[in-house]
Image 1 (cartoon, rainbow, N blue to C red):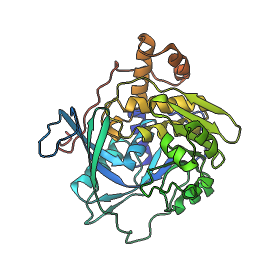
Image 2: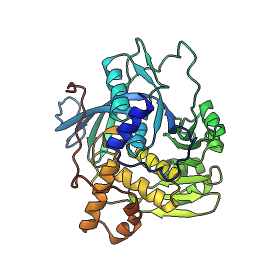
Image 3: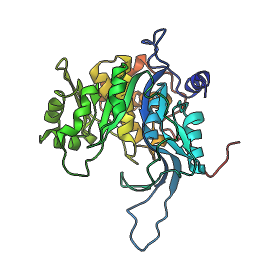
Image 4: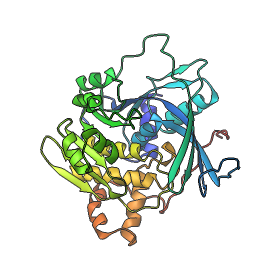
Length: 370
């Protein structure tokens, strides 16, 4: 896909450029670079309870979409950021579907990605019920490229990295040397060590965004806010998500703190909500918004995502955000404090083109496009 093609997709689907005020001639073409594993996600919804062994369960809904690192890439692209993804794709139908959905469907630059002959796509089956999810995944690690990979990472305003306990990633330091602001999250430490030494790559990062449990375990604290303050000694921006309570952030350079409560929503599927939160925070940071506005925007986008099923399926764009804001001001189903907290949206948003609540199309690999 050419840059011009990508710009047309962004103009058609994402409506506005959140970085328009900070773009300058000579800036890098890429706003955000990321790399990782793309899964084909198959999501079953409308389950009343967890499946019971020895029985057959019927789901009232399902969908398919690219998952894994594609959740983050899609969330960034739908917010209007020029996103570059380096990933491996299988040469099966699943890989073709994921590549097409990300390239043509979302306008994500896949020029640094590769298709591997004979390698099948990793697959995750996700079952959503009672606001939670259960997942079963299968896949094999992609083989090394037969030829040297393209120079990576590319020049970019930002990069998003998922830290892996016990395994360093050289590209993180290289991205920082090239001037990218690196935003990092971390997965659950299955070893149970929770060794702070595993966070050594934070020295190259602009921000670290763990959840409360992860933050407390790494810092040996029993309070997520204390954990955020401890992490601010390791990274300029420490952001700890607090689940239904919202999020708390500390700017280690200035000492500024911010805490924003969560938006009240009925959760359908939390898959990908953490990725959407990070994407919202990256957007606000690159745009130069105040810390509290960044935190509020990230929380809002994550809240909107859990009302839909799937990871990349549920990531909101500006139309969804504008529709929520229009609804929130017209009805009294959100606290007045929340409305004041989100008043900054007035200067950002396009007019909502569709009523709230929205119902997105359900992508599937079962149909051909007309």
